Image (cartoon, rainbow, N blue to C red):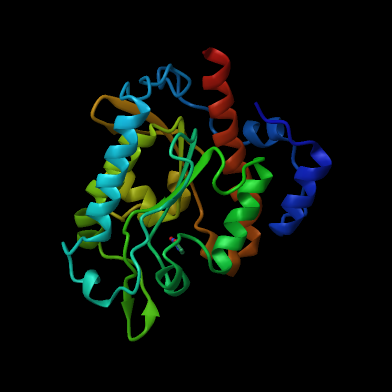
Length: 252
Ligand code: URA
């Protein structure tokens, strides 16, 4: 249940650079609702019935696998691998593209400027990094060219994706938020052809091994830093995700 009062949320939204307040209901009404029959509010596949001990062991093995990965050439230039961070029993899973310069230095996703914005986006949802939210990327190693961050290729994304799939199976989040086109298209298993804006305003589903998880797509924080006018739309997307999760919780 969301307990953030409007004044506090407004302060966080201001931090995000959003000066237009829209109530959650109003924002949700501006977006397409989930098409009938698309049961975004349908019961989720129950979380894995593994015992907590087994789950912890599986996480340790997975992290070890990720930390030693040599599956692609990004391994040669990485400084630190960035597996992901947060609550491994989280309802919320935010997925970005891949580590940049700062993340590669620190081994944690979203620690640069875009990370500060992401933290404010989380706060506007009454979420704090590490509590009821897990943050991961499609690729775990920095992709760069001539010292500059670059978008990971579709091939690099495909090679790394099994790690994220295992993370998703273990976390079994109730809602996934894809940050940007790289994450959106990898999770939908489609080419990067469609525009990000054509993928917004809709609850998609992420399907994996019998799990069906609602997936909401929004702009990447780096894009929002360059294009602040997109922040109001990103807020609408977050409202859609929040309403979707509340719908699931109310149905259970
Ligand atoms: N951009 C991303 O997509 N992920 C990060 O971890 C940092 C920047």
